[in-house]
Amino acid sequence: MTTVPETSDLPAVPTGATHTDREIRQQPRVWGDMLDHLHARRPALDAFLAPLLAEPALRVVLTGAGTSAYAGGIARSVLAAALGRTVDAVATTDIVADPGGCFEETERPTLLVSFARSGNSPESSAATELADQVLDRCAHLVITCNAQGALAVRHHARPDSFVLLTPPEAEDQGFAMTSSLTSMLLAALGALGHRKVRGLDACRRAAADVLSDESVRRVTDLTRRDLDRFVYLGSGPLKALAGESALKLLELTGGAVSSLADSSLGFRHGPKAFLTPRTGAIVYVSNDPYTRRYDLDIFDELTAALPAGQVVAIAGRPDGLPAADTWLVPAMADADDAALALPAVVYAQLVALHASLALGITPDNPFPDGEVNRVVRGVTIHPFPQS
Image (tube, rainbow, N blue to C red):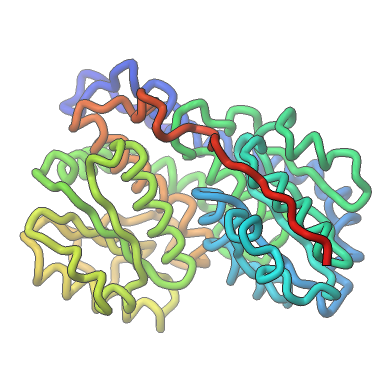
């Protein structure tokens, strides 16, 4: 894994970014550990999943809050194709607020897949409890970074639950989720899309390249511009990646840089009003030949609308894109978009980190006054009436 030497022209990482910088850079190694762990748990996991996947009517619901919810959005379509079952991505925050609306088909067998870094957010456990209350049959696959978290402890001994842990290092100590997101996403793609998701084997090599000095210099060239807002766009699974990228920038800059995410087609329907001459734009370009056309269209449109150098394409292959404004993700030209998202999000993490540093903010704790917390506080879980 390549490190950034302090002797280069790149900014040295101050103490306030120690956790975040390390957790971004550790991802290729942690992903290898995640895959090894997944291989070791494969027999037990398959034994748990087999009777569930034998149900033709099974509904799989991918859930989490914030960044963890975006993990489900990225994985949803490729897992639906791999499993041949209905797969939905529904945030825990939606389930807790409206369990009846999220689980309308109460008799349908359901596998609730919960993503949680700590497992201690109030909505994490509440969503699983509400699913058990509302649904006639619900099993749980808990993917978490914290073996001691409330969610893991609640489910570890249940016969209708399977707890899949990431490597301990993936429980990020920095404010924002970086390696926790990617490790849990990799776990879900490997666990449920076993051998059917293209590109997973190349992710570690691709991420190591994204972390190279050359790539980081391109990122810092962008974040050193006088930009006060960013828009992230993508289609299909990459729309959810755009949402996570915008969130990461908003979090690590403490809200000092405004960010917006949308689909490549949806952006024109009003959200385009977000653009100013000081806007940076990043377009995730799909590997799917059909979807890719729409991403290229909006990239060209933004390139014509904004000052030179402020629009970037992040793509697995270069066709149809100008080299000067394209950040390639190597070895991912034939990957499914959900797999492409794993190394591609590392670019977004680096943008957020270096935008924060450029503003003199401490990324490990961008909200020193505690107005936003690493683990959500202040949520009251109200009892849901029995039907």
